[in-house]
Picture 1: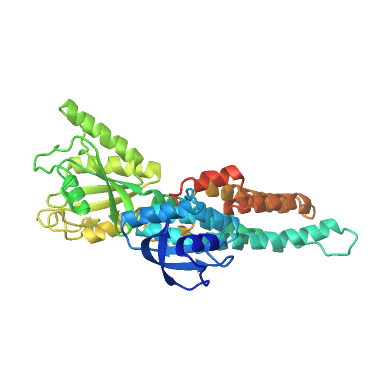
Picture 2: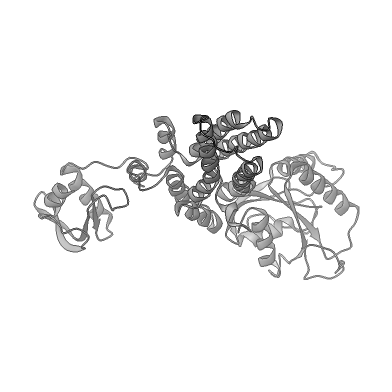
Amino acid sequence: CRDLSRSLLGTELEPRRATTRALRRKGVIVDRVVATYWAGPSTPTGEDLLEITSHGSPEILREIMEAALDAGARAAQPGEFTRRAFSNGRLDLAQARAVGDLISARGAAARAAALARLEGGLSEALDEARAPLLELLAEIEVRLDHPEEDIAPLPAGQAGHSLQEAAGRIERLLAGYARGRSRREGARVGLFGSPNAGKSSLLNALLGRKRAIVSSAPGTTRDVLEEQAELAGASVTLIDTAGLRGEAREPAEREGIARAERALESCQVAVLVVDAARPADERDALARQAVASTVERRGARMIVALNKIDLSGGSADAEGVRCSALTGEGLAALEAAIAAAAGGAPSDEGESLLDDAQQMEALTAAAQEIRAARAEIVARPGEWEDRGAARLRRALVLIDGARGTGATEDVLNEIFSRFCVGK
């Protein structure tokens, strides 16, 4: 960085002090820039850094890049700055993954979850799970390694408590995985209901623009429409579908219903749209039964949206989120309900931390080892320490794997290849 500073700016810079300098390429001024030299290891990457702030012209930026390349620098690889920070101990791998998640976050909730991991939330939670296991393992090994010493046997109750404490912390992380995954990738939210319940109008209202064709004639929607949206901070894919009904006269309508049923199988959240302006009838009962049974079977979530409350004629006692696609009344409440069901704002801080499949698999296996160690205490009272210690060692290796300790070069390459250039 010092050589680069001399080449571009004609001088070395005092560390940690922003300075205005003329940046030159081949002796010609490119721009007057603000330059700051950061001396490692107390930098984001742990290495020396030269930070240059220029005017925003694309031509100026191109010239500065060319000047830096002429001086011996090279373009950064995808994720290279974050990888250097990891290699130099400024971030652990869980935090490094969080940088990539933050860059690609869709919605405020996903962004907040990534920031929590970047600030060390997941690493801290894993350390808290490791601590009782390490303490227990030390107690066991001192007895195994020094049988000649007159050390009292380890009380089974004490060991069981330590194992329960560690298992509880891991299971808390695992319990939030599905919500974390939905928050990261964006949940699929389908609008279902009987024909002419106002599903397409509700889609347009939630999007804030006219995306779906709206008509008073039942059965207007024949295809499945998908649109990205951010509702109350949660990134979702909204899906408009054909009305569910028992029998369809036309082939196109039958195909539309079949596609709606397939969409229902892929949604994390199903919004049952009900026409609140009229009494419920057989069509509504059929649609409710179809949605409710599928949601229950798949472990998804269902929200009832009582649409058309600007009109009269329906039951005021019906349960659901009362709203009007026409006037916008109640839409904020519906958005909040969808966001909560889709994995929006977590009800517990731990729910924000785990959303990576590989980490989830490692922690699931660790929890199984801990449960097996507890089973050893019950099955082999007074003789469980040897086998229990082996279980604890495996659990600790798995927890460390979730954090990224000892990750192979192939794993690191796969993680950092997802980053955009220079991050």
